[in-house]
Length: 273
Image 1 (cartoon, one colour):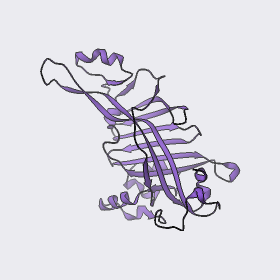
Image 2: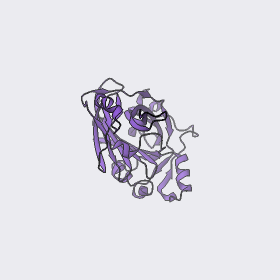
Image 3: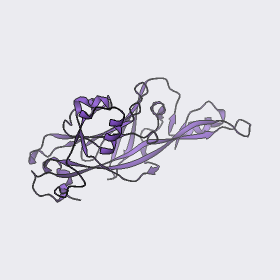
């Protein structure tokens, strides 16, 4: 159960029973470690950090195959960033790891604000968390590449997050159009070979030649994150009472990113579906 601390006397008992509480804590940043069960049944530790000064939230965890997933929500710029550090297959000529970055617009209702995340505290850190709401899978076609050296115009977080990805930083064409209308320099973006209208490019899992271009799909899931604030009404003896933040709702959401790669060697995980 998730709840929040409050000064209202009527909720003191509730605050003592809750497993995760919203505490009135002072500070610009905070870290929360949560044990989460992944889709494959394994248990991992998520690290959630909030930076109230930069108005951002980060979430990081390791998958069962060793892949490190990092998610950043930049509320100031309304940008979200996904990064995957995937262990390479050395025996097949890959590097020690392969980095991917996916960037898109952030909606305000996707995750709780950074100031609320900064106040989250966990009373039972050994409990394995399961999301209250399992959201549907989101399919994203990433039709443009992003120039790392100029990506600071989108978000100051991109350079640190995506420096290992080099030429594997992707975004959607719809997001590019939005950012261009906002005055972002067009030189940041490079349109990739069409991912939906070019029949000459097959899906990578259907391509046998490792050196042929193809359409790669990478999937990930954020198994547990605070997606919504809960509000309670205090009993102050009046008919209306007062409302206060008393907890969070947790969500799980999956993402499938489809994008062009110049050779299947860069998409070996997409061999079987």
